[in-house]
Image 1 (cartoon, rainbow, N blue to C red):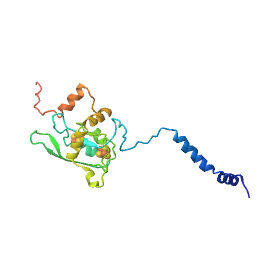
Image 2: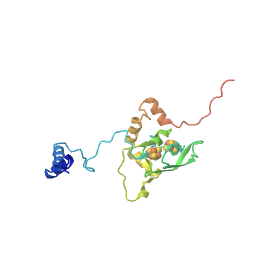
Image 3: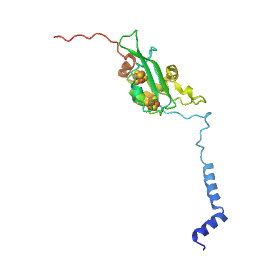
Image 4: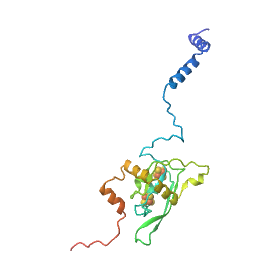
Length: 191
Ligand code: SF4
Ligand code: SF4
C-alpha cells in the first residue's frame, strides 16, 4: 500500500533531495573564512594559563628550587611523579631532589602538582610538541625537567601568575627569592 512516507522517500530519491541538501551546506561554507589552522606552519596563540609540559624551576642565582618534599608526588592523581630526595650536606637540615621523574605519558595535566609545591619549583609551560616514536623518551628525568624550565622560564612564570600562585609584587618576590630561609638560632624569650 502506498503511504505518505513511501511517497516522500520516492520523491527524495527521484529529485536527489539529500544531494541538494548536502550541496547547500557545502556552498554555505564556501563563503565563510576557513577556521582550520595550517599546522605546523600556522600556530595558535597559547593562553598563559595553558597546561603544557611540566618543567622544574631554579632561583635567579641558579639554585634549584625543589626541596624534595614529595608533596607533588602525593598530590598527583595519576601517580606519574617519582621524587628521590637527599639531605644537602652543605646546608644542614635542607634537602633536595637527587632524582626526579615525571612519566608524561600518564600525566593528565591537572596541575595539582604545581599547586601542591610550596616553593613553586614546578610549573606548566606552553610546550606541547614532544610527540615521538619512542615512548621511553617521555619519562622526563630531572635534567630534562630543568631544561624545559630553563627554556620556557617566561611561560612558566606566566602560568604561575595566571593561576595566581605567584603574584608579581614585592612580597611575593621576597618569598620567591629567599625561600627556604637560612636556619639560624632564635633568641630565647626573656624570663
Ligand atoms: S599535572 Fe596532574 S597528572 Fe600531571 S604530573 Fe601533575 S599532578 Fe600528576
Ligand atoms: S617539586 Fe615542589 S612539591 Fe615536588 S618535591 Fe620539589 S619542592 Fe616538593
